[in-house]
Length: 200
Figure 1: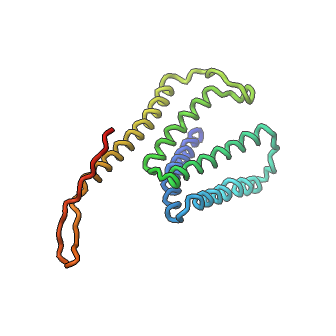
Figure 2: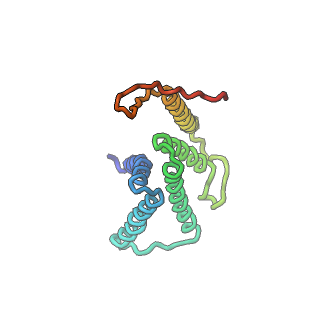
Figure 3: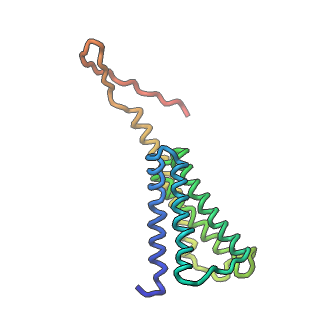
């Protein structure tokens, strides 16, 4: 692959990593019987990859410790906070509040690119840290159409969630006959009463 397109490889790897994140953390929390212990494991992995790895790379390259400045440290630190808070919110969504991982991830990853695109369009830090304004160059209608489709995708996912829950509730109301075993050992079948749905 041409070196100018290598960024796409890492985009794909990032998508793969974040794509499996929610199922892994949700299943890990269930196995550990604790969402917060699962979050702690995520933190340990972050430390190993995001702290020790950069230190080792800087040491290996012999580049020395880069010069730090307040804006860079602040923004990079806030990025870390955003990542950690996002991870915690995912764990709360699928763990504490029993959100279905089938729907949690698509909504998150439909919402995130919309927010990213809006922020990137109107925030121009190259002109000053608090510089906001209209896009300097129009990205074309296809980008805005993509944002709209992403938002519609999240809406369809939520609609699908509601539809699945309604179907599951309807199936529960139409449960098959229940088997009753009397004390004398004979088997009798009694029809399970149908639940009545209260009026809306």
